[in-house]
Length: 137
Image 1 (cartoon, rainbow, N blue to C red):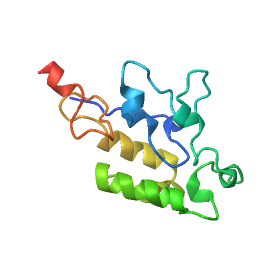
Image 2 (spheres, helix red, strand yellow):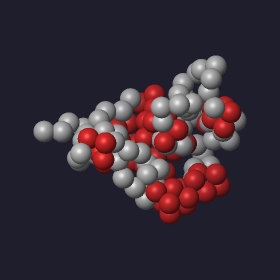
Image 3 (cartoon, rainbow, N blue to C red):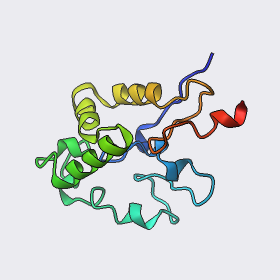
Image 4 (cartoon, rainbow, N blue to C red):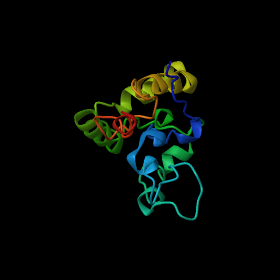
C-alpha cells in the first residue's frame, strides 16, 4: 500500500504555493529551498517575490494573503488565473480553504492530491505526470 506524502506548513508560501510540489524545489540541481526558508542560496526570484515582500502581508496575523484587506489583490488574481489555466490549481480557492478550514486541512488535501498513486512520490504542480513513476517500472 502506498502512503501519502506529507507537507510541512513551512513549505506553504504566503500566496499558498506549495513549495514542496514546485519543480524548482523537487529538482536535484540548483534546488530552491522554498519561499519561507531563509538561506544564502535562495533563488533571486524568491528573494524578490512581490507577494512575499508585500507590506500588507506583514500586517496580517496569518502571514498568508487571505488575511490581507486587499485579498484577492491584482497579483494573486494573476497567479490564480495562470495556475488554474496551466496547472489546474487555484490559489484563491486554496487560500480560502486555509482561511475557512485551517492549514492542517489544507496540508491533508495537498497530501492526497499530490501523491503519485503508482509510486507514492510527490507530484509536481508543474507537471502532468509523476517525475519518478516511470523510473520504477
